[in-house]
Image (cartoon, rainbow, N blue to C red; front, side, top):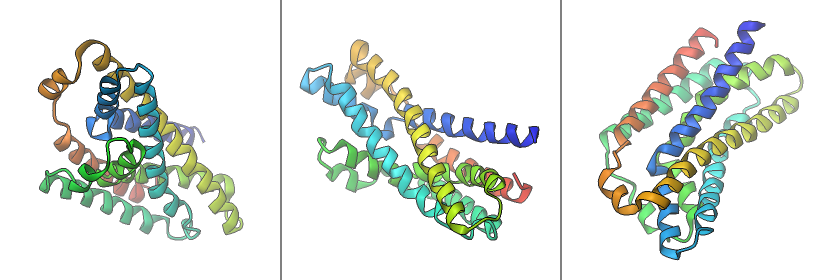
Length: 223
């Protein structure tokens, strides 16, 4: 029981830290929030832009997690689903390592539509996929509470968990991005950002591969 509690706690911390990681990554949009505030010359524009980015990211996480939460056969096919999910995440990481170009369709989204841009950016970068192995691990422990009851009860439990994981992750992401955005906006400005900020694309792709491998390992290990 203590081991299970520790494992669940570790998985929730993984949800939070992945949120921080996404928030730090400029590819998730906080530079757009800084740009909007500087262009409008209003302090209020910064939190408004961050809120829109958070909304888009939250919806993107749900778009990825909800289909997995609705798999009522998760109890009987848990191993297979977790293996496939892990392979998908690894595949996305390898693809991003090979293809370094940013998706062109993101440039076609109007800058004012920050929520839509954030939603599409998270999908394009595989941000939601990074949560899938963690989410499935939490579902496995949630099943111990639900037991082998009706599929409807299990699906409802998983859907609630998907919303909670997406919300906690998005809150952590927004908090991390907001701290950086406020610092850049008040003291440094976008000129510094364009010259001094480091590129996280390779690290992002490698992290996807690592998370996918962790998901495969944890599925075989029964965690």
